[in-house]
Length: 382
Ligand code: NDP
Ligand code: 2IT
Image 1 (cartoon, rainbow, N blue to C red):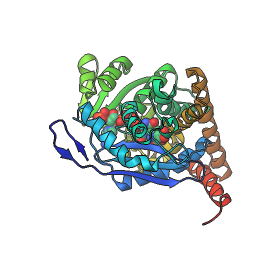
Image 2: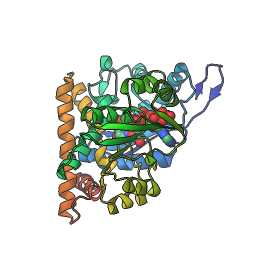
Image 3: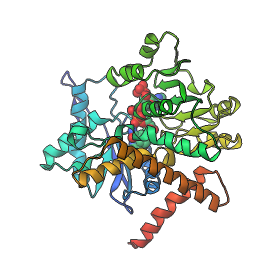
Image 4: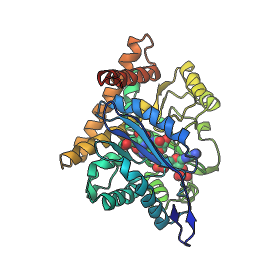
């Protein structure tokens, strides 16, 4: 329950699915979106188990969230919801038990309000209980960038096998949130040109390349729709409720939400000469979409491998918290790059060993599953 600014009471439903703790404490994000149901949290938690296993870090799999819709709510209203949610959730959490982080609708701001409530209730400054914290209160450098950067590092590894690189390529990135913005930043650093990105209201096409400072101002500071971006960049066009996958590109990164890239989108990407797709979001490509990309010879990095950089860097945040230490940006980014390269190597080697070279979906699923299954067997049956 939470009270809005007019004093009216609202009720939302919150969830935490603690799915598997064979490799470490339950670990995974919290999502605030009106579409959140138990089913959503279960599929995300199931993916998280194998993703976390691929990182090689000591983390189990879980996920949570609520059907609370932050859109149109004031900061005070969102803070009151975060506090109410944590008032129920805190008893299930702990650095050795279950460690949430952000996801759609939950960033550093919301983690702060939830961490504050956890601290208030428990009387413990237990930094390792939540990740994605602000730098001044136990957070780690690179965690905000990690998922988007990591997805691009994975993409780079896939392209390297074919003797290709990101430099000079035309890219499309869906979403305009934490993952998308940081993926765009890294693609641009590596010489790619990102010509389109999207949000829940439509997409923007900017032939000159997405201008990051404008995008950050509109989405992170003002929290407006991409229409405001188009108003400030005269050469760009805003397409209300348009389909971003109609924009021709060589590299496509779906970084918004599940099932956002279907079979006809995949067919369009293939027809337009797309070379590679790396999933920054969780399960953005539908199964028939994946099949069409495979038949079209497009490199495909599934989310549980390609977006694992976020949770891996959360585990690095937990390490720093446990040691009461903080690492430099360059040291942490180098560790992230190393982890993404190792995930790529595990997926590629497993796909090869199972007779399907280049099939990163099969490689990621089997490599992740085997680690978890072996740990479960080693820990004994009950
Ligand atoms: P944010 O809330 O920061 O951004 C989400 C973006 O996607 C926003 O631009 C939002 O539009 C758009 N979006 C959300 N839902 C929909 C929808 N139903 N249809 C169209 N657009 C939508 O979330 P993140 O960037 O953190 O998460 C994006 C994806 O990445 C999710 O799948 C998440 O699970 C996954 N992920 C996130 C990680 C992290 O560390 N944050 C780690 C690994 C995976 P609008 O701006 O209009 O709200
Ligand atoms: O889907 C994900 O991996 C996340 N939302 C990040 C989870 C985490 O614990 O950092």
